[in-house]
Amino acid sequence: MLDRRLFLHLATWLGQWPAGPGLHVVRSHRRARPAWDGRLRPALAVASPDCAILSVPPDRVPAVRALGSARPLDELLPALPAAVGLPEFTTHAGRFRWSTAPAPLPDAGEWIPPTAPGLPPWLRLFDGEVLVVRDADGRYLAGAGIKRHDAYGHELAVGTVPGAQGRGLARRLVAQAARRVLDEGAVPTYLHNFDNHASARVAEAAGFPDRGWTSYGVFPR
Image (cartoon, rainbow, N blue to C red; front, side):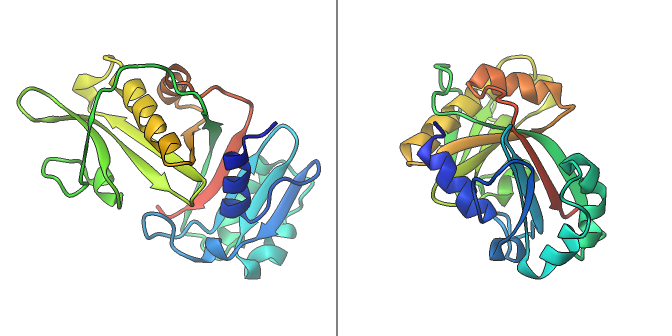
């Protein structure tokens, strides 16, 4: 049975969940409003082994449906930016993971404001505390942020500087952040590109198994 928090997250984030077999294009006003970082996400999709939901702005439903719902999502993806009226945007395709039981790894980081000095630009996009590892001299080594899409689902993002990779910091940060999300009453999710094998290993080690779910989207460059 699907976790209730995940069900509510998908229904809220996409506009509908679940549906029958195949691809279903649904309308959502959320696709026409800024997302967690203040930028548009005019098309988002999640596909499980049973169904796929593609969420677009209400006024773009006819154009997207005209692409052909019988085609696989990965074949539709190149045409989606133009179909939602933003041909200058780029696309994403990858794995969609979630966890209700993060790996029991030891905590690695400290929660600090995203405005703290010495953080990389990507961590400054978050509107809540970020999880950071520093070395003995206070230099940034790795960090994780939480994208609070709605009350039920929070997506994790993680990054490590090249010189600190291979120490297991990313997996520990993901597991630690996932525990915080669960404590807040939401389900933690984790997305990564199909070819990002390092990110896939981090997810597996942190307790986010590959259940055969995928995610697709149209994003600003």
